[in-house]
Amino acid sequence: MSYKTKHNDIKNELQEPAVAYMAQPVVSFYSLLGNTKSVTVSNDFDIIKLARQGFPKRVLLSLAKKISLNIQELSNILHISERTLQRYDDDAIIKTEYAEKAVELARLYTRGEEVFGSMDKFKSWIKTPSRVFRGEAPVTILDTSAGFDMVFKELGRIEYGIFA
Image (cartoon, rainbow, N blue to C red; front, side, top):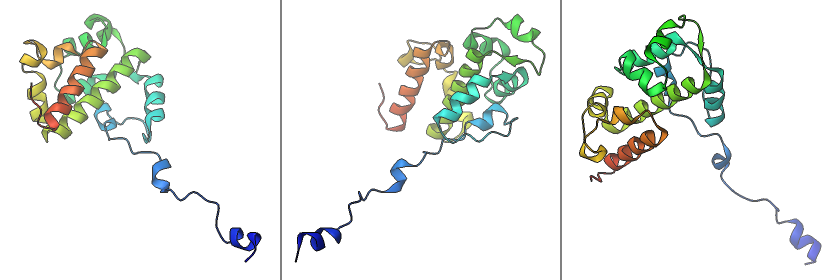
C-alpha cells in the first residue's frame, strides 16, 4: 500500500462534540424584569446589551414588587435617591448603571429560587440576619458588588450543603 492511499483514507478532522461550541442557555431571569420587550436572552452578550439599553422605571418597580423590596430598599441597592427614583416618569429610561444592578438582582433572585426551591423561601432567607454576614440580612449588603459576590457564594455553599 502506498503512502498516498494509506493517508487519503484517514480524514483529517477533529472529532469533538459540537455542543461544546454552542451558546449555553441563560437561566430565565428575564421574567423578573417584566419581559416588556421582545428580547431573546440566550447568552452573556445579550445580557450586556440588555443592561446597556437601560430599563423604564416601571420595569424596575415591577422587579421590586416581584422580589418584595420596597422603594427604599431598591433605591439603596441601585445607589439612587428614593426621591430621584420617584421623580422619573414611568416610561423614562433609567441609566445603564441602574439597569445593570437590576439585571444582577434578577439573576440573584433567580439563583436563590433555584437553590431554595421556591421564591418565597429565598425572599425569607435574604431578609433574615445571618452570622455569615456578621448579623446583617443578605439584602442589606447588595449595595456593593462584593456584597452580591458574597451572597452568590453563600448560595453555592447552601446548594452543596456546606454551612459556616
